[in-house]
Image 1: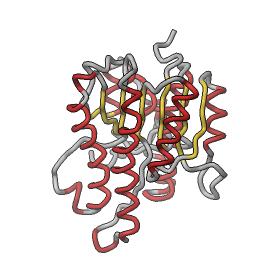
Image 2: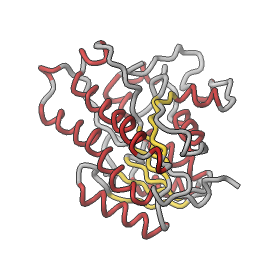
Image 3: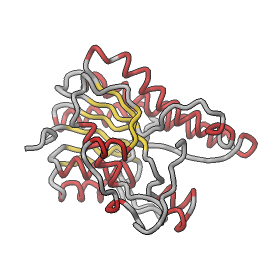
Amino acid sequence: MSQLKGKTVFITGASRGIGKAIGLRLAKAGANVAIAAKTATPHPKLPGTIYTAAEEMEQAGGKALPLIVDVRQEELVMEAVEKTVATYGGIDILVNNASAIMLTPTLHTPMKRFDLMHAVNVRGTFMTSQKCLPHLLKSENPHILNLSPPLNMDPKWFGSHVAYTMSKYGMSMCVLGMAQEFKRKGVAVNALWPKTTIATAAVQNLLGGDALMKTSRTPQIVADAAFHIFMQDSKTCTGNFFLDEDVLKEAGVTDFTEYAIDPSASLTPDLFL
């Protein structure tokens, strides 16, 4: 029996992409998945809603709770957390996956987009963690996982898109701070980042189109890595900045071709690596 069976996972931005892949992987292990995302009606350019994601997760073997959540709105986050606890009795894992991106230099970054990235990436991550922590503290093996990069002060990661870098590093600084703050209380707080680009709507529509998609891996590699992290003891596995491939190598995976969109293509390293 999976040790995740019956455990409750709260995932932001889980209606598509990496968030949805993590939800499906944990649902397959018998988890209850709270899908906290904005897409309640079909988007003209993006696949999936919280309801279609919930259907897929239940078909995969778990239970799913679709929740309309904008992580910028404190009241909506609080309501979603309360509804999750009322439905499943608690929260064991939080995945801060929701993120906004705009890879622009300073003079080409509208303040509206700056505010969006910081409101979703930094404030949303901090606030969702804050609202879930009282329940995580009651769990036997509580984990927070932020989808954010390892901290690296090399100026090359800042020069081209300082606003976005600041916002993603803000998520990683939440890992650094909260891991230290809650270490004695047994809550694991870690970051996970892909070693290569991942075939998501952001890569397709914002970064590189079909050409970059071909040199990317599927979201499944991040989902499998997240699963292995959640198998670890929260008291000892905390404060880490994990890379998906390294996690799976540690778990014994040697063949990564199943994750490649095009196994014959040379993979593109992800941003911040």
